[in-house]
Image 1 (cartoon, one colour):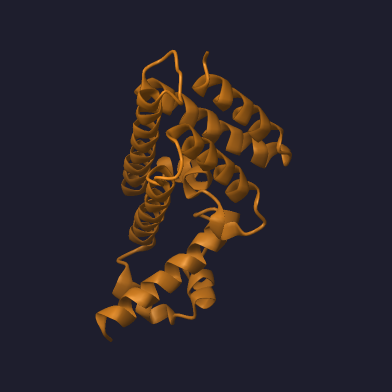
Image 2 (cartoon, helix red, strand yellow):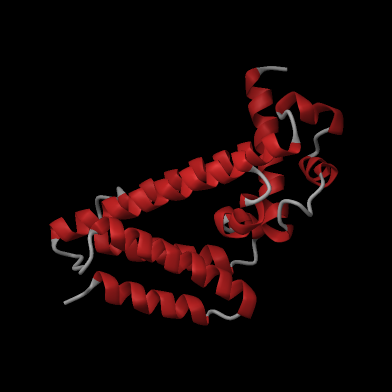
Length: 197
């Protein structure tokens, strides 16, 4: 098997797993279900991953790599101001979290509480990944302050963490209530916090 074939197989496993795990969680999903969905024989799983825990760690690393690349595309778009990019990011958050397509759902939201107590390696990937998200938000907020398109009363670092925590909470509330009200409130609060005139 070539490196390209191996990478494609890993990608198929990740794609299938993200969709299933976004719907059911990590603990409730068996490897057979993921491998059947990916069209990969069970015997070859351990060629790619040493254990289910190692697979979960690799899945989260892959997820954050893709997520952060998407954030970079949004925040590095030269045609938009930092404020516009930030608001676009939150609008995409709402679209992804309310979509009927499970593969778009945020694994940090879905797995954060579930695996943080079950797997230290997975918790560490979640910690690193969410810290990198907050760092990118901080950079975008700082840029907006420099441009004059964002006005805040806290430091960019404080505001980035405050906003990210609020949106994680809104995502959980949306899952619980199955209504968009928490996202609507989060969007109003975000506009208010970034436009503190």
